[in-house]
Length: 108
Image 1: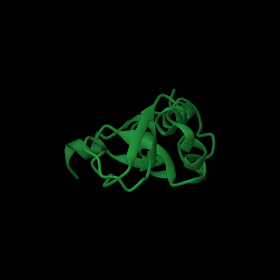
Image 2 (image 1 turned 90 degrees about the vertical axis):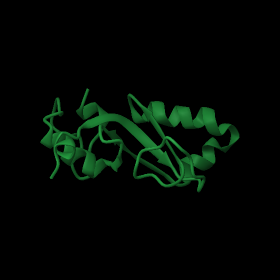
Image 3 (image 1 turned 45 degrees about the vertical axis):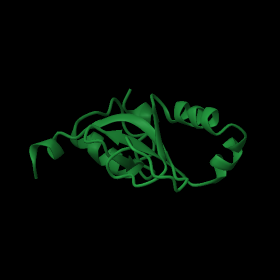
C-alpha cells in the first residue's frame, strides 16, 4: 500500500448526481455525472437545486448518491467513508448510524 493511500482522509460531504454526461474535473473514480461538494449534504442538495432548477424534484427521486470526497480525489459512499474516517481518527463522536455509514456531523 503506497503512502498516499494510507494518508487518505475525508475532505467534505458530497453527492454524486448521475445524469450520464461526461465532465472534466470530477473525482478520479467518477466517469459521468457531477459531484457536488459542501460542508453538509444539505448544502450539496441545495446546490443541486440551484443547478437543476425545475428538475430539482426529479433529482430527489432520481439517480443521486450521498457520500464524501477524499483527499485522494475519490468519491466514496457513506460506509467506505466511515472506514476511512475511523482509520484516520477523524470522528468527533460515535457515528450516528454505523449501519448506514458516515455523516458529516460525525466529523465536525
